[in-house]
Image 1 (cartoon, rainbow, N blue to C red):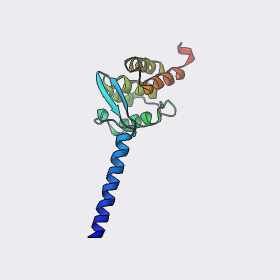
Image 2 (cartoon, helix red, strand yellow):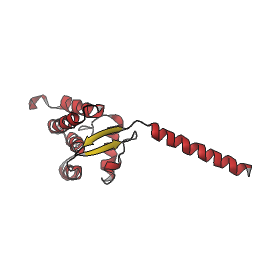
Image 3 (tube, rainbow, N blue to C red):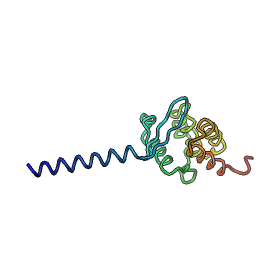
Length: 142
């Protein structure tokens, strides 16, 4: 009986520890494509739960690190993969910008992030992605 109580107490303490960490974990709140999007500290968002797993993983890494993965690091999103990404992104400036950056279209990505940052002036991630896309643009494009 005492062992069962000890196990129950331990499980309860673990549950509260995890719950409190999740509650206190920093989140990102922003507006995108007319919707409120919440991004958890682990980079995941319920708003993107229906996207293909590789796309969710790429997004989570971007949100966690606050860094755009650009070619060649990103493995250059090309052809069908790029078209699939853009189709899945729909009207989301956030997803479209990340996809364009991963494909190397940093000027187009910067435009998406500029609109996102304008709509979310208090969200550091939006400004940070914009700054990265702008700094990655090819000087010949200007």
